[in-house]
Image (cartoon, rainbow, N blue to C red):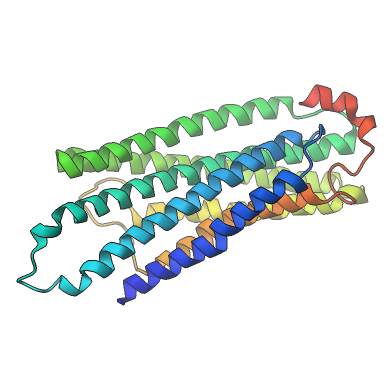
Amino acid sequence: MKYDDRMALAHLVMVFVGSYIPSILLFLNTLCAVRSSKDPARTAFTYFKFALLVFSAHALFDTATYGFFLFGSLKFSDNYYEPDFDWARYATLIKALGIFVRAFQAISKLSDVVADILITIILLRLSTATLTIFSGNATGKKLRLVSYGAAFVLSALAFIVFGLQIRYIYEISENDVEIGLDCYLKSVQIEFAVRVLLFVICLGVLVRAVMVKKQVKADKNLTWASAMLLAASVVWLLHTSFAMASLAAWENLSNAWNMAPVDYEFYFYIFEVIFGIWPQFAVLVLVYFIGLAKANGIWSRDQESLTHVEEAHI
């Protein structure tokens, strides 16, 4: 097995064992463990369940991408330098593998961005819920509308990127390579804009989490929840920073025919997991623990006293 195959296999195992399987188990557990009754945080944890499903899809299709890549590499690596090898015999299989790898990668990227959008809503709603419980008054209505508006715009851009990537796959496989590369370049440019917007939003979420932490520090019942919210915001900043920086470094944003600013090394496969996929899953795990806590969580107060808040807030 070649070095690049070993790195790809390590990536596959790390994602499947370290992200996909745990995310499925966590989702099944949320159906029973995470509170679903009416309270100021109910919306956040509803989105949390959707985010887990989307992240699971992201991890699954990422695993499938590297799985098909490994299959093709291992099957044909020994024959690559054989002058008498009948490549025409396997032309259809090679073409199909290329399409599968690119298509699964496009779906994985779409799931990644959608999961980030859902995490944005989740963290903002949790910060609002924490302040609502602390003050006893419904707050954050304008922020909720802004967050939904931003989520709509980002989702639209994400699906545009996905459509361009599908067009790219079709063109380079069946039609015109130049048109395909033009679609790919546009998809990368729009994806970079989405990554920058997510990074900026993440900074705002982090600042808000710090403000929430300071405002509720006098309330011991909310100290733990606000600390976990701040930790989740910091970890999410790591994920969004890496996603933005890696795209700028590993893709040429001005010309699809030219080399990227940084040569892609095969050990970057591991970096993609450590700084990209795992931090995203870690944020969801932290949110899960916020929702799991009952004695020291964001619904540790008497629920009846919050009835008027819930009706105004949800």
